[in-house]
Image 1 (cartoon, rainbow, N blue to C red):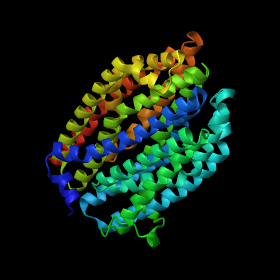
Image 2 (cartoon, helix red, strand yellow):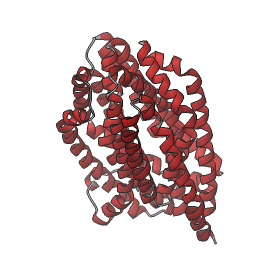
Image 3 (cartoon, rainbow, N blue to C red):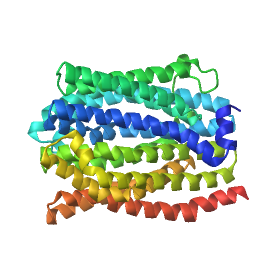
Image 4 (spheres, rainbow, N blue to C red):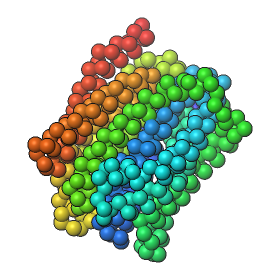
Length: 449
């Protein structure tokens, strides 16, 4: 058994989870930083309409890529399970099937993104003064779908086997390249908003290349041998069973966010720019949330494979508590310093006002967001992806959309939209807490007896 497995299945729970989660944290930090730099450079050198076009991109991009990334997360759970149990044959089949699925999905996203971007943007109610830049940005971005998907697949395989440091290094390299290219294209050559998408594609291509260079050189069972990349029927079905619920979960969240974005668009480009700036700031709260959500899924899955339910219980408590505390701490900072953070993206008073208003509405409730996301990661690791999918579909999609649609008919205020997030975070957190307490923990305890 490798050092990675020994670390996640035998080293102290706090140490192993932190050593695994910290590189993911820094990976996400650099990704968030270069996403923020995109908006900072676009907002300051091109203007608020371009900022609205780029900043509002997140919900649409995640709508189209979220399903694929969710399936990759589900596949990662299987990789971690086989890796923890030492089943090399199953591990090898899962890795190569997942790579084949990533290639196919990236090609499909390229076609769908290029073909349907204008229709989706019109459905979202994107203002006329923004939609031109948005179409350019999205179409160029989706031309690079294959490297975007492949990096997520490669990083997922490495992280599922306990190596979270290598993806961190690759993402840092990509982030630095993205910043340099943004400054070169936009600040230096005064190119348009499409150049920001070109910079993103080139940086993602670099990270994908580095990830698969390492996997191609890996001698263990999770190494990638390109001649073996194909769909293995039973393994593909297993990946789909585990991954599709996670993909649906990502998609319904992003679908709800697209509907929310459409409602924000109805308040004009200044509201779009302000909320886009807030979204970049809010991204920093996802750093500990995503880190511990992924760490919980991998840690739990590997320890289930190694038949260590005692460590599963300890990991659950440590991961949930730590992520909740970190997220809330960041939320307090954002609440207090929101005017400074939003002003960095755009100095126009109306834009800043919208962003600060959203920050002051949501930021003190980030502990609910952290608990919900990390509970979902934990349940994926336990092999129960249907539960988070059902909760997100019911609460973060159906209820959120219904609330906004109905409430705006009576109170036409953007504040109504902002409150949709804390309300649905709270309900989902309650449902997850009840499930973990009365269903998940008893089943783990029974397996230990």
